[in-house]
Length: 110
Image 1 (cartoon, rainbow, N blue to C red):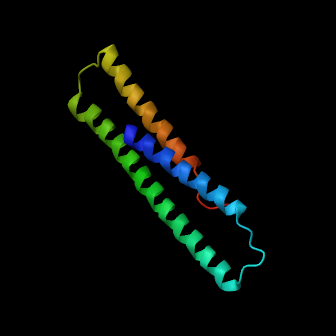
Image 2 (tube, rainbow, N blue to C red; image 1 turned 60 degrees about the horizontal axis):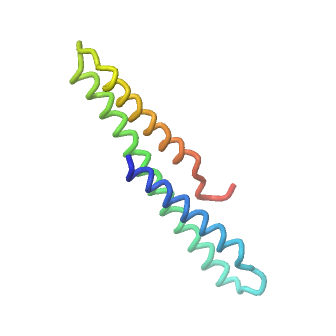
Image 3 (spheres, one colour; image 1 turned 30 degrees about the vertical axis):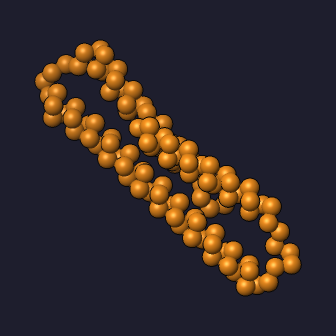
């Protein structure tokens, strides 16, 4: 879970830094080739981050499935202790929080 949160923070930092540096680069005075090269670079950056986000969302989905499967298969007919129930609920909440964080990231400007 810590790894997923860390990945979300790193992606947010990369996006923030990219937006900051992009906004300080004036396009006036650049040749078409330079502008085209910048556009290609931006496209590659966006595609890379979108792929990372998609992979992390898939990992979150897999973790959610594993939690549900363990609950169904391993605990069928058994009751969880209040502590176990709280840990499961906390894990699900953590996954939902990280998933929401990835859902709110926007790689491309709209």
